[in-house]
Image 1 (spheres, rainbow, N blue to C red):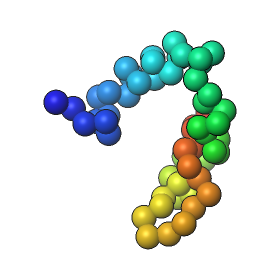
Image 2 (cartoon, one colour; image 1 turned 90 degrees about the horizontal axis):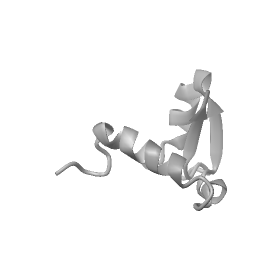
Image 3 (cartoon, helix red, strand yellow; image 1 turned 180 degrees about the vertical axis):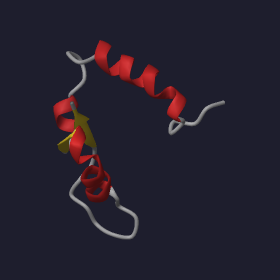
Length: 62
């Protein structure tokens, strides 16, 4: 059974989000957005291991 962090589940989760854009409060879930070109900064700022961070959920935008 796949775990929630299994990369193979990403397409299914993305489709679920697409289908529910009007029903779920994504604007309250996402704390930061980053352009795709800043993917490394997104990971760096979102890293919470052994430190406090203000990034709750980061989203990459094209």
